[in-house]
Length: 111
Image (tube, rainbow, N blue to C red; front, side, top):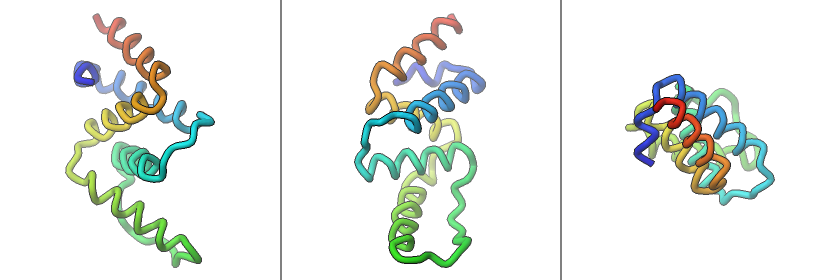
């Protein structure tokens, strides 16, 4: 979705937050790898993508932390803006018109 690069930083941030709210509130179930990408893009876009381990994991947490760390590692070369765009594109792929309508609304307002 090349049109996202036409948005101002404020509009992109607004759309990113809308996409986050819609992804967070949907009853739709996502595959685990999709959830990991949502997680990684969100953390990276919000400059929370450091890989520090804060506590000793219990039970299956160690494996979950490893998957999260791997997802963050895979996107480490993205800019904050690109992470927001990737998050929005992933949301659009899985939620469709809910996100597309918001993009179109912001682009029309810009024109």
